Image (cartoon, rainbow, N blue to C red; front, side, top):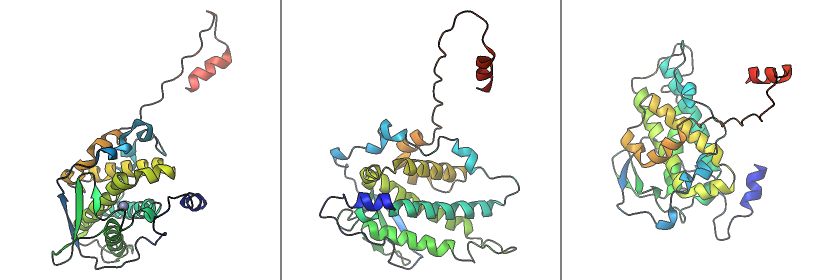
Length: 262
Ligand SMILES: [Zn+2]
């Protein structure tokens, strides 16, 4: 928080003041649809997030597949519920780090690459909204769902509803939109805050998870496939530094131990 406050004081003038980013509570049962706007993104907005300088930065270099596979003895729905709730909290937190830069002026639509996400209300009415409004809708909906005891039961013996899987898919789809917007519209600010490693790790963990359980239609995530391929591949192991050449004599006990440990 200290870091963020210090960084925020350095933000360019003219930006709006920090604002709680999901203060607006709205009806939770809304849908959104994806529609490419047909425009090519501006040339200067090349995919900075694909620069190897940034994609190599992770919080952990770990085979994420091991983290997402359903453990034996754990119920599938319990696993989905636990992970979905965690991703909601983490993505909400990640967005909050740049929320002061995501305003109705800077982000007049919820964009990601060549796509604009529109929000549709419960009656199917298309709503034009800014990115912060869209994120408000997403976070309010997710908060309502994951805390609903009828949908995400926490009490022993309580069953998950039949609609559980489809609601988890819905949450994951919306959370993906937020991640995609973070990369497309706020990667520079994320780098300025030195949080790109957290974003990369969160994104890769999320994508590996939704792929494992087929929670998002690949057509939805394809706009970020280039990044997904880079980040979801385990980072190559560092090339060991060759040992300095030694005279052709018997190795000392200490060097034998060293080799064995490796
Ligand atoms: Zn934004």
